[in-house]
Image (cartoon, rainbow, N blue to C red; front, side):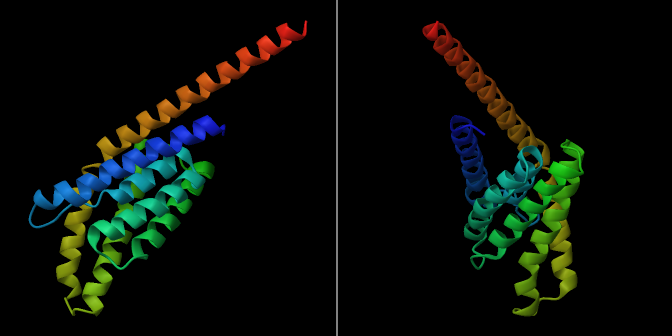
Length: 187
């Protein structure tokens, strides 16, 4: 990947993470349904991994995890580790075996959200003594609520992917023009 394309990719993914972090941390806590807020940052990590591959998924997972730990006031590291691992794993699957389609994104997002719910449930279950049955109901509803946002987040990720592809074409065309100028200058 050319340096300009890499810079554009990093900036666009960072802006997406910041936008989703703002929604998850500042807006959705005030728009609760049955006391539940959606968990959106894992959707970004999963979507980037499917769209862009293992490396982008892992890097996005690191930052999405840090932001998730911050937004949810979780011990630093739980979501960082989970989302980095799932970003790398989902990205590897996208690079090797699964299709880069919405249905794949939706299904893998559901898996990542269930894992995220378990991460949130674990301390409450073992440290606070809250029964698992109560937590399971909340986890299921949070997963369903979060999955409602898969389509808009996927659409944003796909539009970023198209922008990255356009920048690759533009950079490639500029490289060809420069090469032609150099050849003409040598003649």
